Length: 310
Image (cartoon, rainbow, N blue to C red; front, side):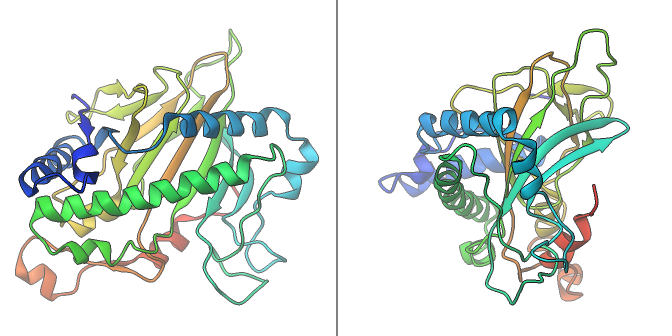
């Protein structure tokens, strides 16, 4: 399996012809049908912002005190300001482990107490620039996510608004994650994140320069290929919900993290998901399926996928 590099700049250029934009859209379409992963260049984001995001994340994980991390830890919904979703956590499983801090789109709602997913972000104070940098980064990726959904609509020959109207207030999730280094001599097969597919629409992934950590399942269902970082590009993959939306034409690909370096690995996924109240139904496929109203409500999928405690 080859993970293609797609230059998206022409689609973002208002002077590009319809023909050129269609070619870019077709490249995305092919990647989603055949691989489910692609590298995105020509995204219009200054590389310095990538560097700032990575350095801020690393500074938080390496210098924030235990007390600060505890102050912003994820807490159960219905208790105080908790919503099961936002804040710092340490994920420990038999086959994996990492620490992370999560931020999500804030929606106007009554509370506290909050229901699952509908709380308020807990921003660290260390480093001071983390919040402003993350908010700038999020703004860019929200815009980019909408543009890619418009490209998908063009390639699939469906009305642009079919997708765009359901992601214009994307319930995004930004995660800063740190995978600890594995000391020499310890079992290096149990460091990272278990095999999974993402449940949403589209994931933008920014990582440091560690190679060999992100593994993507090949089409034969047996081999694992490394999706190593490409300078200046974002690693992108589609999720289960986009598969539902396209009636299975786009398939989400299983992947995992197997971090074996002795150094900490910083990973920053941005999950670009539908609007909180969006209903996602197949827009392709046979008329019978569409007439039955098959589909999912995004908020139901999200609240079902979040599990507390970790």
